[in-house]
Image (cartoon, rainbow, N blue to C red; front, top):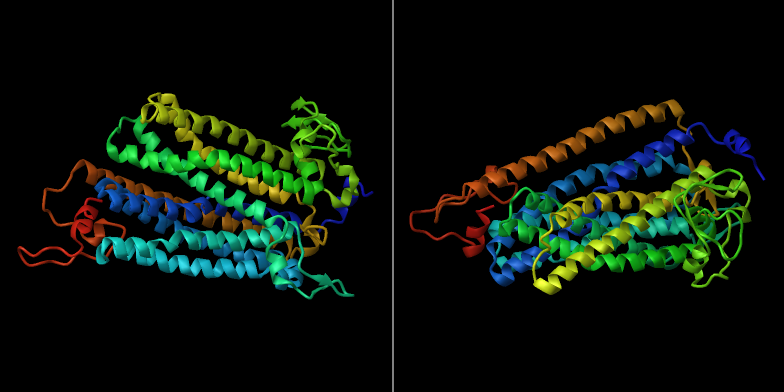
Length: 492
């Protein structure tokens, strides 16, 4: 069994900066993913409501959300492209040996990306040029392409957690690849649905949180009410579903990746009647400092009975398991997810109870304060989900087949640290630009709402809106193409 000093001695010096660079870019990109995956669905749902009920306010919200969706997609292109390059530049050992086995997932994601770009362009262009229902039906595939992109990424990641669909030749290289098995791995289903629902839930709470803040500031008009109600309802419905999916995913980890489960639950020795620790810190000798200990609960959660045997970290050599620090990080990330999920269920029940009794939103300001915070809390849990997934798998980049240290680049540590500094500067500029654009759009929309155009006035030109072709002058008395859709769209 290798000691910690021995492990450090065998670690390449470039491993730490490579990990930090990948962690920073992934943590930054993942903040945009909920909106890339779920905002198209929420926007199209609002668009359907607008056409179904002839609702000008809903149509205005859908148009504005589509503008934010387009800006977010542009920023996601930058951060996603950097991640794609980093996979090859930082981890050539993994991509060189295993790329033919699990690389199809990245190909699927690339196709989804191009389709989504085309559909977003059509959707924005169609606001003024297409008939209302034609425009809507052309937008329906947009959420499906977002789900397709998530399919590709999760297929690749779940394969890294439970690799299969190949055999190794005499030199240790994968041959006889079975594409179907390499995509649909044991962890693919639990991980995919847990991830997708998390994206929808997060986007719903974040979008609703924007309008909750407006509600708290006294903007109690129908625009803010509808902007809050639809995305919050989607998120509230999915919250208990996500809690069950998370429990199922954790149980899949228990069966398929027992050492990762031991890290997430701070289980040192294989045993039955294992207690559950809420937070706490694992020491190198296996003791746990701090935290709240609940007797037997971990065994009950894993197998529904106290006699369930839970595999401990010491079931494998120290070189094949996460360190005490890594286990503690994975454990805290997992506990934060579970805690936030439990609180969101209470918030969803509060909302559902008031709606069923009064067919109205809760009147308490505390509800809207909690709703405003819920989106930020969900973004934190998204980060924690990836931390638990990736840190809990250490030291493996391909579980039980390749260590992270074997996959890392030969580039010098100094160059990687410099690259990290450049990426941080670029990402700060990119996200600052994204925030500035969104805030500018919000200000313009607020001015438009406070100074409505006179009845029968022409819609604003393209320079005043973030989408649609420039308005063309018409002869006096001529009707505008697009009917009521174009007239109501001009209000945005």
